[in-house]
Image (tube, rainbow, N blue to C red):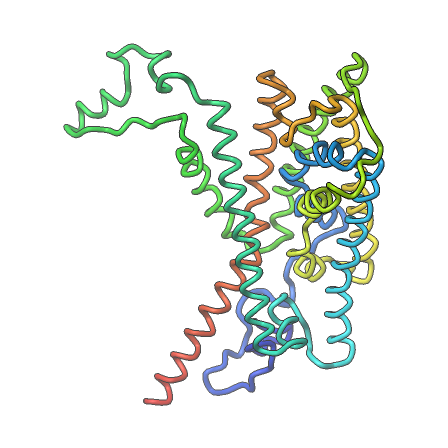
Length: 370
């Protein structure tokens, strides 16, 4: 990592310049792009909002609607406080002159808990964020397969045997061409993976903001379609046996679902670093968390009131095979496709730093030998 003055940092510590130190820092450090309030707001929203929202109506069913509201509000408040604890800790280190700047969780772990803390933080970031992104790919593959799969192959209902492009290609090339099984989720995972790799080359969260905005729009559109269906079900009176409290038996389950739905702590430090008005970050974070909590509350409450005891664990199951289900699945998959590069951003940072440090150590050994 490098500080604003171009001096290299290893494990958060300044390294004295040597003959091999470049005169100018790599990249446009002094003039890097910073995010406006609007971009930061959308980046925070897309960091938090995801497929976890589909489990909230069922969590309200298990805990009761009033208890579910309290759990969701309390979890959002706790998540906001934990996010700001990281920001306050970073600002304290910088204000006290303990370190010039702290840009990553790894550096924060090093300056607060030492080398062991840094390694633990890196490991947890890679495992948690990598796990989330693997779950995203599985979710995308399964839902796209359920939307586009047919009883037969994709070409059989549309093309005759003479017009089958795979046969034509096989006859030209003189070798067999494997048919794709469009009912398998792996096919769709491999289709979207190249796009994820290309988006990974965008290293600035500010430049990823337009994709975040688009993902936010499709996510809100999906939730809007579902809430329209929920409201229609409430009007018809299908929601019955709705309770406010169910006691403590399902309390931990409801808390776990709420934490999964509002979790977004992994990007708070990078987002605050690239915000052009850093002293106001607490305000923009609070506004984003309030918006997300309100959206989640309306979605979960309408869902439980609409279907009552019939609320499914994954809410799209309540919609059956209607066009609403297809729209929701496509919107959520699109949102996750553009959320993936943001969630992988901390993983790339850890991997590149670890590899660069290893390469620097090897270069130092070779230089000493010469």
